Image (cartoon, rainbow, N blue to C red; front, side, top):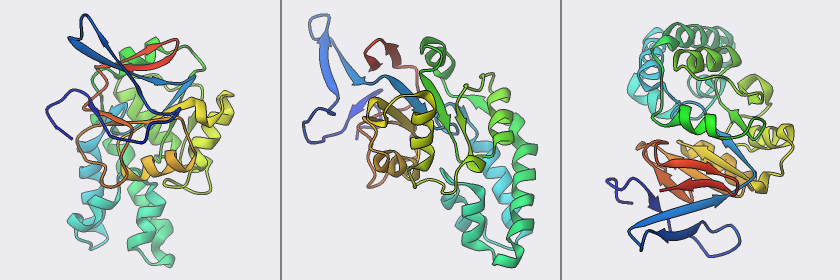
Length: 240
């Protein structure tokens, strides 16, 4: 994928879920349509830039746990804190370790900012046609959205609302059900491999990747560096 492109299309088999591409203004510009009825957004890395806060919080946590931050940090993106903690901490110490990281992340939430284009895209999507599915706690999601100047959606599925975190599809299936739209009529917008795996397992219509962190083997249908090139139409998400 060319990192300098504002939009990169990824090769996938052609079927009813293949992104629709069309040229405009004599072929000078390509517009890609991801057909959908509703949009399910991840939060961190998609709507909110919380990378600085994440690195600070988890680095502090790792030091408190006598762990190497360089081993911990690659595991935290797109996952619930309880799942990351379980990877590094013995069962008897996990409740205190989860409580510590949750407190540290709330403390650092004020540094979060909006991803470019997020506010404009959310304002364009009709009420009740979008939801957020995040691995953060409800308090942390609200704190980061508020710091970024974004309003939480009516449907917000957080870490405490599911038994299984990403890459399990439970969160995305729950969000689609709560807004009353079949999963295969939804586009999921994600920035992390765990989230893309969750979206694929939920059998959503399309997955749009955001950011430069990389998706590894779990590729989205299309990818953009931020949301400035993404708009809403009555047919779905349109990417220029």
